[in-house]
Every structure is written in structure tokens, then in C-alpha cells.
Image: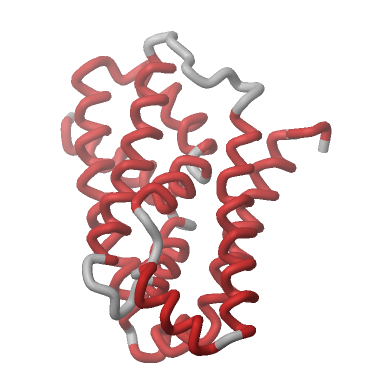
Length: 200
């Protein structure tokens, strides 16, 4: 019985978080060569995913911190971060020396930036997790949450693995400053449009 729940939880996590591996690889790439950046990305991923779990668990018990009408507007978080990243990429492109100084100071994304993107991108996760949690009971819900939190570490390792493969690392190092804003803006717009925010 428990093995069945573990398998179900692992499958559910994989299906709802497959897009996070690309985002994590981009974040790890952005912080490449900066001390402590990997730790900040992992911390941010755990913060964001813990927020997703907290909302899903609360909703499963009938308490909704975020009404359904608010969920589409979470797309504003990755959209804003994507626009910020695009602005920084454009500004840094204007002055290469300033780019190197900026990267040395920034050291990659902050935990809160990673957490915001993870949480905003998890609106669909919450929608899937709530009915599963509501029918799983306390034991099943705890087991799902434990499996999910273990798999967050696996996802972080996979993202780091992809970001450090020579071919992928070269591509991310060359195009990551363009790809990250495009992906974040795309995620933000997708969340806004699919949720019907602003009457879209």
C-alpha cells in the first residue's frame, strides 16, 4: 500500500514539475562560478515548493489562502522577474566591463527570486495536489509531501547536472542571459492567459 502511494507521489511530482528542470538549469547556469549560488538556488526551490505544499494542504482541509480568482495573477511574478532579467541583460550588453562587475556582485539569482518563480509556476501543481491530498488522509498526505520534498532535491541535482554538462553549459553560458528572461516571461504570460487574468 505504501509503495503504491510512493509510486503515485513520485509520478505526480514528475508530471507536474517536468518544466522546473529547465528553469533550474537556467538558474544554476546564471550563478555558475559564483560562490554559494547553487545553495541559494536549492534554498529558493525548497522555499517555493514548500509554499506550494502549504497552500495545497490548507486547501485540502478547506482553508483557501488564495482564492481561485487570484491564482492567474501569480503569473505577474515570473513576468516581472523575466522583464527584470531582460533589462539587466540589455543593460549589461551595453557595457561588457559593467557586466563582469555586475555578475561578480550578484552571484546568480537570490533564493527569493527562485522561490517566487517556483511558487508562481506551481499554480497547476496546487490544482492537481488538492484533490489528491483531500482524499489521501493524513498518512497519505504526509507520505506524498515527504516524497515531493525528497524529489525536489533530485530535481535540483538534475538541473545542476544539465547546467554543468560541457555542451549544455556552453550553450547556457552563451544564450542563458537571453533564454532565462524569455522562459520567465513565457511562463508568466502562460499563467496569466490560461487563468484568464485581466480578461485575457
